[in-house]
Image (cartoon, rainbow, N blue to C red; front, side, top):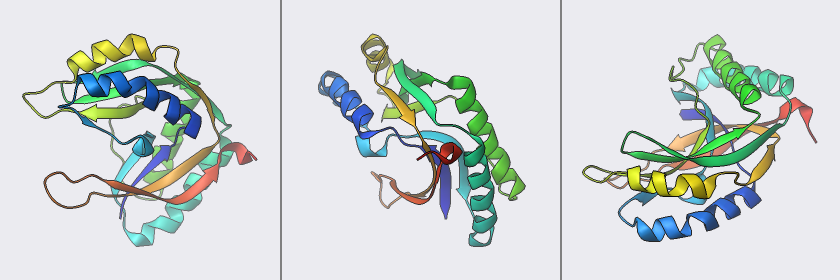
Length: 186
């Protein structure tokens, strides 16, 4: 199954961010806006994982989560990856967030699962564009709007299954298959 390790923002953060994006959605209808319930911070993308590796992976990810403490996060501006992906920057406990991402990737590698080696940049993907369209104007418009945005305390880490769906406009469906409290938080 296709898996990734993620942190989900709280319902309050999602609602606040969703409301802030209303004018941008109206002003940029050609972008493909990500549904708010799919917003997450990817700690490690694992791709296809064989069923016989999952128990070891889950045990190792659970240890990594117990060693971490709950994290303070804050949405702090917008940016883009090239012309195609618009995102909201996630700041706050960035060093601890980066260490949790590294621990998640290390847990996967120890479970003999290859991990995407891209540099970790904590963000929530908001929209995508297909050429010749670009997310540049939306990123420039949203960056000041999302500065000093909603703050959260994230207390759980999840292993998520991604089902890509079918057809040209396929929208991935996400299902949490395992969840761990950070630092044993209550």
